[in-house]
Image (cartoon, rainbow, N blue to C red):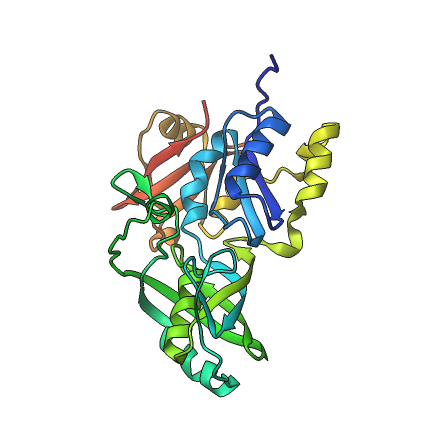
Length: 297
């Protein structure tokens, strides 16, 4: 039996189309020997792009990655609607009426800012302990309430009728498949998501991601650690607190440390020991930092 390998870090992987995010997690777990592996935001199997994986204790940081803004390049095909809102599903409606660039541009205006979005029925959201796509495949109809999401930026990059290429910068929890479907409804001819690439996830971008094939080869020859990134990048936008020996002892034992005046506006912080090692995540409680995740022992 293979012994467990220790690791504490992140992998910025460029996911190819085909495998699910869960597949990549399982393959990395097997290929590295690290038992605990998680991700910072799933991608549908057909989607490509940035998938941040968390290894070892870094799995405890996944919530910060999951909550970070995301950027996508999406191809939306107008005039054809599917039951899954993407190209993997069954066609449920066709509308041959021509669509103009001006119609698409006008429709985009209604989807910028904070909007109410209904998730697609074919999704991994759970209802009554079962995933929605399982219920959908069983022929069950589920009424879904709209959820607030924020579209920070929505730009038409290219128009090749009947396909629009869009840049979407959005909050966590936004479904680009639902956005494509809803745009089709707004234009009046239906639409589906033809292709999707995640180009940015929080602090991580596609240009710096390791291609999956390269990581797979590195796991085979045992050199995969060259791609391991520091775990504190999961909170790269948060301020840093540098602890002295006494402060480190307090944090290790779950005790609070004071908030410096220059950090009065921060709600989260990264904590480092006197040697500069990342040791904890701190959450502000009034004038104090409370350790909420401690990695130093």
